[in-house]
Length: 112
Length: 110
Image 1 (cartoon, chains in turn green, red):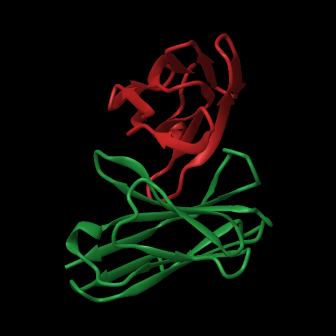
Image 2 (image 1 turned 90 degrees about the horizontal axis):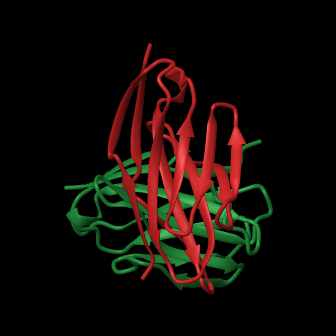
């Protein structure tokens, strides 16, 4: 039972570099989310998707893009990384209309 | 805008010493209040959902309660394995997206 899998687990970028975080879920969930977690800030929603081919902005979407080409995958992209994007990123999924989220184990991203 | 405030920020207990964590919230038309547990280096794990004032949920040594303004997570006779960060979140109105608090870091010493 893999649940929600995030890759990579750790990454270091230089300012201006780009990268993509991959999230995969095997629970056939409709909804998927990307959060960032910073000390003293709690979890903040970046983008989310309510179904294949659909995405929407969350609380802190600037500097990020997402795509959901397949139901089981949700990609988070950073086109030009900035030090302010240093954070731990969590992907989550849920059944349609449910607020019971299943989280991945996170990606620690450092932007130098 | 939905707001969630958790207190204390950190709590240190001796094994067997019962206590409570607080989650106060401001939301327009509460849909649900959620408790999650987060272990170091891992993602949050769902514990409870509460929907209306007066509702209670229990799981092992944990009991969650809800009033119109706040929720409490009561920990009875905690063990070291209960050490974790406990997160509270709410959804309100037609917004099904979760608003999280900053969490309470609980440490239980043997």
